[in-house]
Amino acid sequence: MKSGNFKIKQIALILICLVFCTGQIFSQECGDVNSSNVVDIVDALLIAQYYVGLNLSVFDASVADVSGDGAINIVDTLLVAQYYVGILDTLSGCNLTPTPIGSSTPTNLPEETDPPEQTVEPGSVDCSRYSTWSANTTYSGSGGRVIYKGILYEQKWYTVNENPEDFSGAEFAWKLIGTCDPNTVPHPITPIPGANGYATRYWDCCKPHCSWPNNLPDVMPPLQTCAKDGVTEQSDPILNSACGANGPAFQCYKMVPWAVNENLSYGWGATSSGDICGRCFELEFTGEGYYAWSPGAEAIQGKKMIIQAINIGYDVANGQVDILVPGGGVGLYNACSTQWGIPADELGVQYGGLLSACQNEHGYQDLEALKKCLRERNNSLFRSRGLTQMAEGLDWFIDWYQAADNPRIIRKEVPCPQEITDKSGMKRP
Image (cartoon, rainbow, N blue to C red; front, side):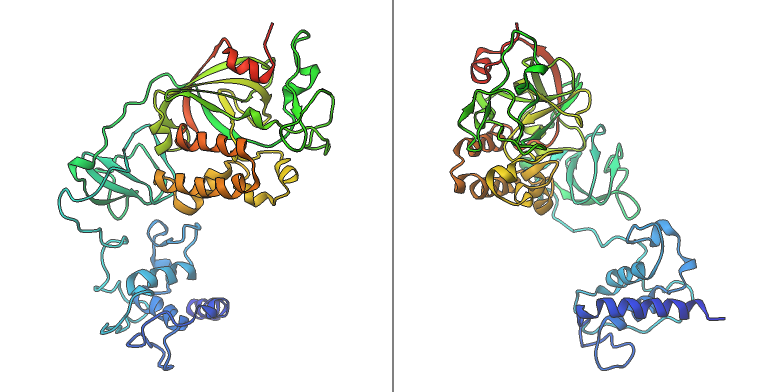
């Protein structure tokens, strides 16, 4: 019967074949455990074996499952080797005396599984770009930073209602970064109470629900659609949509949001199904993100927006308002690739659009980096094609809306402002 170590070495050999192209990953100064005169991935696996032990049964999953895949395997040992030995660091002068397999945990290993926390001078950390930790916010992903009692912490994994002071360290979700410079600590906000919904975003270029006569009260004219240029308005209300039926009816570019003043904007959007065409809703932004903390959501706290419902969303939940924003994501349907002759990936992420694409590149916390990324994509996607109205709508999202990601709202129905009904042509009797 073959030993467990033999089986594991078989697995290791398979992995070696897969990742051999990664080349040399240790310094030539030391680490040549197998005396092959080259330090390579084989040595990395052997170092994991000797320093940590490939006898996987000795580990607790909550500690050793570094890769987070629910199992303890060769991938975890390699990751452990990377941390304890330092695959990316020069090993000059290091002592790699192996610990025999099956022996107790080597005494030269650090007790904590996290890298040593950063040492900083008291009060030297610039915290101006970060928000105060909130017990009501879900912090998903990793790498986000928050302020708690004047100290900056960085999140390592998903956490909710775990204050960083009590839940920081090797086994917890937060890592201490350092004490904030008092001059850079932003004034903490108190979310406006009473949120009963949240705002998402989309622009799919399709003919809206309220452009079909059968979806409207008898005495209200339908919302006009536009030709492929997005500007030429069409008088025929029964033209097929560019979505699904590949018809000639597209969303008009004039339906972009705009700022009335620094605290009020107008626009359009989709709500849940029902008799919604032409109704208007005031959205007051509470300062919180719906899924997680959003610097943009915090930045627009107290601002208000009035939107007129022109569409329904089969994927729009109760309380959700899907604001019509250029580059906001195509959602279920995509006529934009047809309208502009571009691949879908240039439109960003299907749900979330350009902002989600920028978040994938820059993370969720650095608002200025996200806004810069959005401006670059705006120039590339819209301005370079002469789509001025679309570019202006995305400018609104960047500057007035502060690239807020799914902000919580207090939603209530209000009379429609004339400026909105004059543009849409829809006014309820």
